[in-house]
Length: 189
Image (cartoon, rainbow, N blue to C red; front, side, top):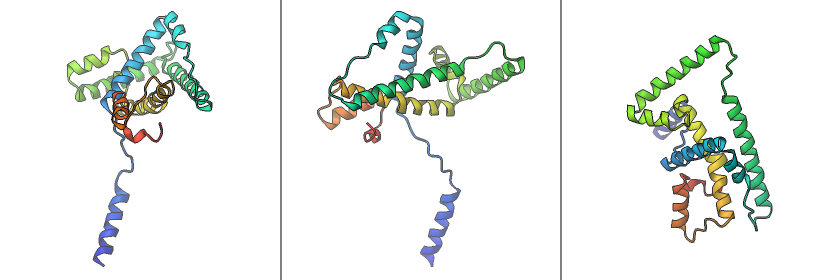
């Protein structure tokens, strides 16, 4: 009867707990993400380099997987362009919407000022990534999307093109960790 009572209490406690699991990210992923965003920003300002970057190196020996990687990359590019279009502020919107947007920006700024030092906040603002306009929860969601939609497929493409060729578990771990990828994602790779 004692074991039954302990189990029932434990199940009740489990049901009451928050089921939302917060996935952790490596700090290297943040660095790679910021670099990716800054590269995209410079690609927009320099159209000649963007055209050169569009030339995809051919990956031989992948068969269907190479085609799937290209399709995945196209889907990601389409998704990113839709997100960027959705983030643009319309100047012709009513003043009430603009005031609401400004109020939200002020709230997010106060959140970041509480979490970060002044120097760290100024670096965040100067990074030209607009991270200071997002809430921490939004940033975590965006980081996980970057992880799933960009970082993992990029690693797979690097392996497929033989740009990276780990010879043992340690070098594989180092390759993944320097890109902010966790070893628990190895099955997805």
